[in-house]
Image (cartoon, rainbow, N blue to C red; front, top):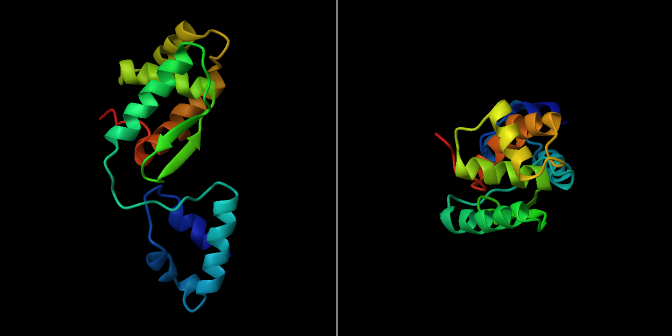
Length: 149
């Protein structure tokens, strides 16, 4: 039930329900696809996205939130305009976003050093590598953080 759906979603690009329904595994089985999508929604692995919206207002709010995180305040959420909602954000990820906002070219050890300068206790190399590999691209697709390219 999940394999064709997960394979279709693995590109990370938005996909419509109609295009998923056109997959051979779901032809004539819209109810099964609907249930599979709902389970992924409940688990936090799938999000319905809105049509393209202006990301600048949400990014301005996020900028204020991660600046506040750098000043010691933790809010734990960032605005995701493509979702029309918020996403949970741990302090290290917010500090990394703040560092990237100041210098979008930071990656790897340079990003780790920038986060350590903000809060030495929040900078874990493993978590930061996972942020760069997984969260950062997703945040950029969702409009949380501007693309650095």
